[in-house]
Image (cartoon, rainbow, N blue to C red; front, side, top):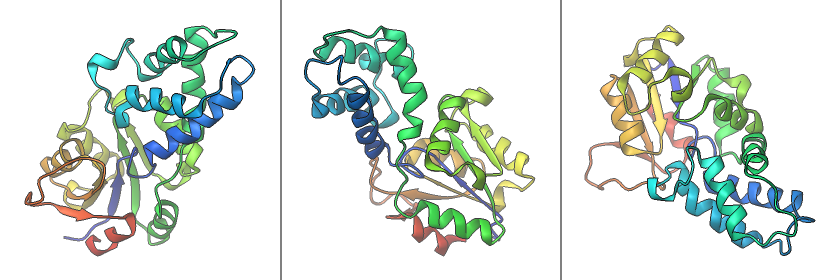
Length: 228
């Protein structure tokens, strides 16, 4: 089947979530250094990693409706402050700065440049707030590559629901059978895309899947070229 469009997940596919947390933690520590008694970057990273949980937070770790507010509350409670910022300020700092701290997955930019030059339609399908998705893509410098950027926050439908994949293919004007989807989560990404009738490739290394599960696996983004 001829592939005419390549669709991507965002976190741990185009952007490396943990490396982004490291960059964000440093930015936060620098910004608030005069308000903190001790600017312990390792503690800040540990708090954010615990709450964020790779972008899939556990319900018991969320003290507030969003990751941003839950992280903000934990930072308030667990860091030693000389001058404590309020919850809204710390939450807004996440919304404003986390995306701009995004770190690209190795090989992502070269791949997008090549695919765009070869005439493929490109899209992102990502669970999460739309403004945050746009901010991350802006931080990566990738926004201009994509014909469509679809989020669960914008559409009101989350992966693995096949409809979010089908909606994106309709927006691109390309049938699902001519779309290749790449993501890191075996259920949300691979099962969802497959249920929608797309070809799917799993970027291994971030979530567990049985090694005997019949699935196309890659270890780095450059390997997707064999599926085009």
